[in-house]
Length: 210
Ligand code: PRP
Ligand code: URA
Image 1 (cartoon, rainbow, N blue to C red):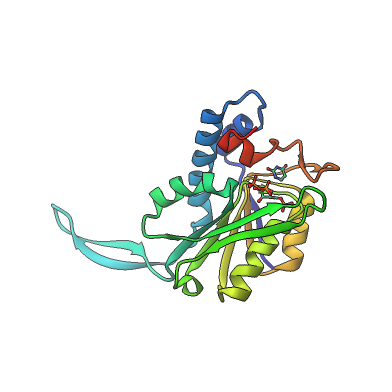
Image 2: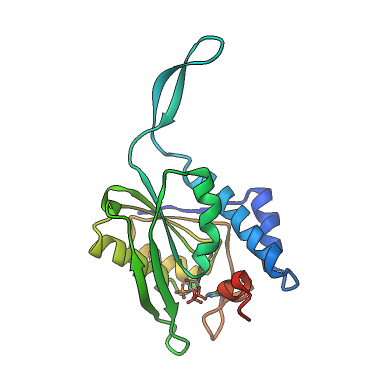
């Protein structure tokens, strides 16, 4: 069974409060999403494999640890997931980036796929799906289905800033092998499948489209 990790670090919780505030403007909102993604990335990559190598410092020989094991890929779910990519790439510059375009049908709330482009060797990479919001779980499940069934990905981690209990349950049931990192699990979904209290429409708040 995949693990659900709620990241309660004070810096994350403080920045999350900025996202939740309806008075936060686009610039501050976008910056906070990026900063949260970087802090989440730090936690979500905690167990990456390392190997020991020997290097020369200006003073002496030193045994140091460098990343080993699978190469990494970051896969944002468009649009809102884009807000998490830049800061993650700045921490992991060798990561490749794949994109999955999904939007929720306003009536059914089911995800509709409109775009998909992956690095050619994605099946061999450890994939971090990033999307600030896990509401019904439909978009995350669709993204994981695509990565597993169409691209043969075997190692996938999901990173969402805010989740609803319904979304966590749905993803865990559909894909029990996936680890999920979030900074908060909120109370519930409302009748429009928005997270309560949540932060509103994340894509609109990142890109200023409302
Ligand atoms: C939002 C969000 C997730 C999805 C979550 O995207 O970024 O992808 O909703 O909802 P779910 O768990 O119920 O599937 P949205 O469909 O609003 O598209 P956008 O990012 O382009 O605005
Ligand atoms: N997508 C969002 O942007 N916000 C929600 O609360 C749910 C889905």
